Image (cartoon, rainbow, N blue to C red; front, top):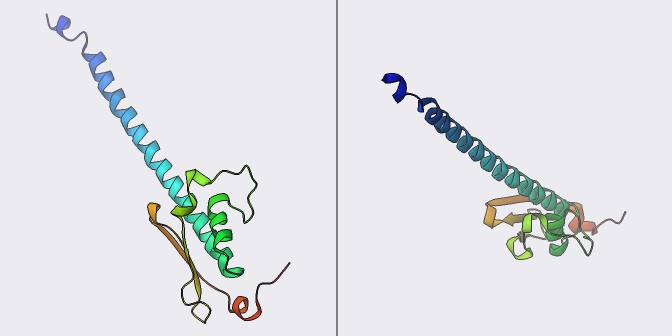
Length: 129
């Protein structure tokens, strides 16, 4: 009689283990994707702030660096991860002066990057390659 009662036991145990494993796997994938997106946005903000610190201050060019990865995007370029120009904050406090810096932020994702501006940019103007 005990044999009859345990026929479906392994099927139920397998379903529970498989369900738990799949939930864990999907959770890890979701967290990994979130970290990947945050790292990409952080890198773009840092690169844009650095570009703004080394070149003449141009908020639109800095914004394009975050959105498209280039200062002059092509007409068919799409913004990174669906960002909008309004979701990027660009500022240059204490400029011109010795404490000048460029700040690039993406508040919706909790990202902010600040770079000190090269003194020669404000003294001599931008260099042309």
